[in-house]
Length: 214
Length: 297
Image (cartoon, rainbow over all chains, first blue to last red; front, side, top):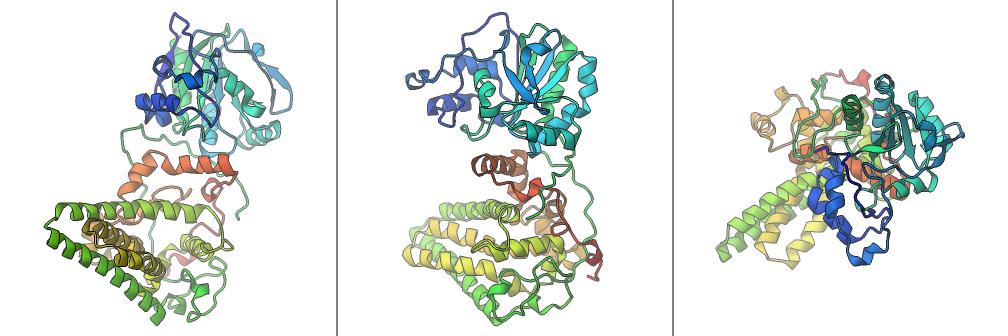
């Protein structure tokens, strides 16, 4: 079942999900015990943040400020599909739908990209910008964007540095980069996080629904 | 390998977790049964004529490569014998031990797992490797030919169709029959291997029109005991990435609903950099040949 987590008034000190394939068993177990099936079809991150308390052996992995609702995500500067550098701050002043996806030219990511493309006018009408991020390089993004006529920016997060900083959780015990979308408001504050690996079109539905409600 | 042109995706809502739902079923194409494709392992069987690669020529009705040879029949006899021995030993040991529930349940489990196994194997063969792959190359090539001329399977004689699986079953089940007398294990093995061996027959039946099928087979298909014609026809539709199971098809809805194969494909892609065939726009070697579809059934 798809799940979203909404902005709350408090900022929770939250522990980072391990982003490496060597995620601790206890972390994964706590994730799975709560949402074993919805890990693929939507993950309620706020609940799992509260309850997925890692064992002491994994605390050393990080107590970083992972992006949650109500926080301003860490800034980044990445290259887009044309090789130009783009900073997150460029989008301040308008809402941004920033979606992390596994890889160009894979079925789910293609479905998602095309769905964002097909609804792009609706996002523009809501005053929002759409930005896709994956670990692929600019050349891959360029080919992908050209092939499917994507009208929005694709950023190249080489080495998955931003993915790790933002705490995008992996799927299948770290075997698969997660598919997670953030909606930032015009002040750059995270207002919505939506995670769903195998129902990529739902990212469009949920983010549009949220943008229309605010 | 096909040129990697990404297929144009069609937006499609995947089912929610926990709710099993079909992909929308389109009316099946008219599949007229006839004509030929080279049999699996035809290159390994010296009794069949050497034919061109599977997809390079249109099939011919009454192609000798579709007929059963005595070697085929021998393997099928061997396979059936091992399966029957397994089942007979299971029944006999069950009677001696006065247990029935566990062996019967084990047999049912074997039938269910055979469907799962058929799907995973079918997925692997359909998506990875090619004619040059060691061990599996001939079968991969044959599966490709089957996708181009799907109805040719209905023109194969019985032993011709089953002999490859019968060979595998013989090699695996015979040692098991020799080393164990456990009725539960033998019940599982007998049913599982029997269903796997006959999966090619179930597969052939799934390609035949209702009018050509024995009424009992139609009943079993409609009842979900054997894979249905409609469900299997879904597999033969682009992008050829679903409904891989061919015993009962009971796993198809579950596996497709959970995006099981898509998950496996993504993991393989990220771990090994290998793309499955289903991610690419199907080329002419894979899509059904419409010109030969209308041969008389």
